[in-house]
Length: 379
Image (cartoon, rainbow, N blue to C red; front, side, top):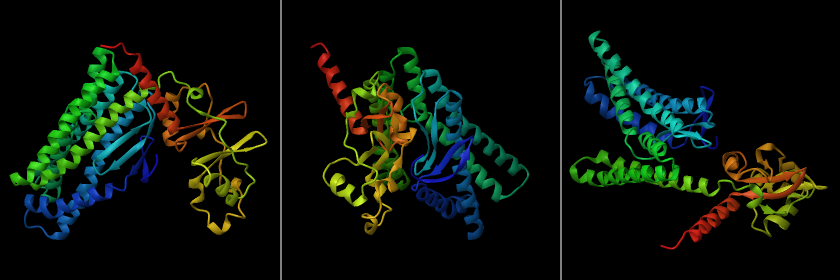
């Protein structure tokens, strides 16, 4: 899982905090401390409100983590690979390396999240009523009521039928089941998602004029949903375009290579300064030794370039960034995006045949889409 701060695992799945998470955590804790809890339980001191706000914020993001963990757990049980769970400014996301293979899997995976939020909401509301009956006081009652309310709201919101919300994925799975066409199902669900996004953006713009500044958040959330809906539909189009396409149909053949024993200074002068490549295969006596990229230079002082060799900084050969010419590109996309830094060496029998980059993949997608468009009969 790239970027962010790794904080641990849940059900064997890596969990990380995106840097944007600290922004929303701070805003939430501030709002609970200085606005929500003083209104719900007046008369307490600032230290009490601060403690309630901090603990409640942590429990809220624990609820978001539980929501995403249920998505990931169902996905794993259905054979999908999960790169990790990321908590971020708009909540959380389960980072799948592949899309569900059937409508049934998508339905179960999508519904698991909102269901878990609704269950958590019911549990917190139950604790609130029990605490009120036992006179446990505002330190229990106010946080549990808010957590119950917000989890129920989170569950209901995520069930709205707009892709990429969970409800939109449920809708897509149902349309996919009855039509057998994932692209059409994604198009319809994304259309609902865009409609929801535009509605939220409009509400956010009108909010201040109606005396409700808090609705300004809807502009950001709507913008995020709009981008995600577009991205989800484009991803399906790309997957369809790459269906059945093998590496040797897209790769750059016989790429320029570097010798592991040349100096870094020579490599920069003769390769990085002369060509547009951001990475080069490292080859010695026809044997692939690894790959060196411009990123490998970051931690090497300029004064050491003449002394250090390419082999000192290269990424040694590894299955993480090696593939074969017969492999289908669609099977490689998770590795290409996450582990291989957007480029793979194509090797067969120990011999380098080519290099596959995201640029190669994008060119192939465009070419196949244009070919399909040209093959369509005229109206």
